[in-house]
Image (cartoon, rainbow, N blue to C red):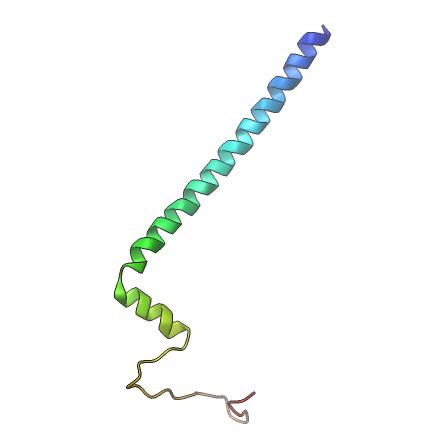
Length: 76
């Protein structure tokens, strides 16, 4: 009877580990898909330009104008 109990316990533990592994697999597949999409976007020059503009970069022939709220200096 003890051996049956041990086998049932092992079976339950293994099923739990399998379920956890399947959840992790789904998470990794989603992450992989996002990375694939990001790589495809990175090949687009317009997308890359948008990213660098979000970081504040401008072309050398452009003028950057700071838009600050009234009463605040740009250095704050």
